[in-house]
Length: 142
Image (cartoon, rainbow, N blue to C red; front, side, top):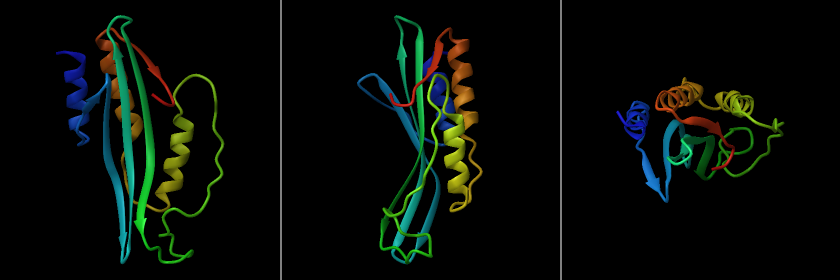
């Protein structure tokens, strides 16, 4: 089985749909959603990757993003999209940003109820790339 077919199977199990634009493949999935009277918030996991056939390299990036729209219920309701700040610390260097995405996931679990394990998806894709003979690299932005 070709690498792209194996990844398409992994992504379909999330369930998400794989798309391609200019050599970059991407997928996203709504992990959790909150609705109130005039407000809706979504927590979206997205992944992007590029396959370099000549170098046999597989470059992967992932993100956990919160989106929202509508009228919030006030500062105490926790449902005011577009407002508020959160201070975070980011580790720089090589390797996956698992600490940072884990920190973001821990913070967002206070607002949303979900059991999605994004590191499991990353590891399955990394294993498939290695089995096909590709060098796996993780990038913050692809």
